[in-house]
Length: 77
Picture (spheres, rainbow, N blue to C red):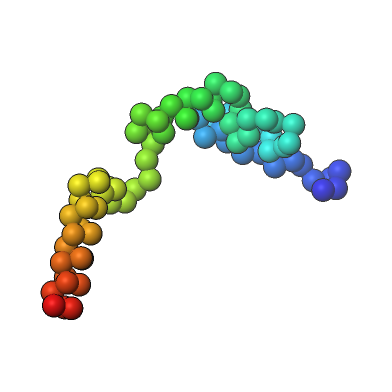
């Protein structure tokens, strides 16, 4: 990077404060350890989540496997 270019700045995902994206910032993209931990807590308690269908629980997976196995047995039998 040449001296004429300004360093990349991003908004902290938690507080929106401008943060210089640099190896010197150990918390990037966050501005501080506090913001990083607040974000982690939001993922842990389910406040942040990725959109999509809910994951299957073990019972549903077991039932799906049994149905598949029965289908194979009927075709072979």
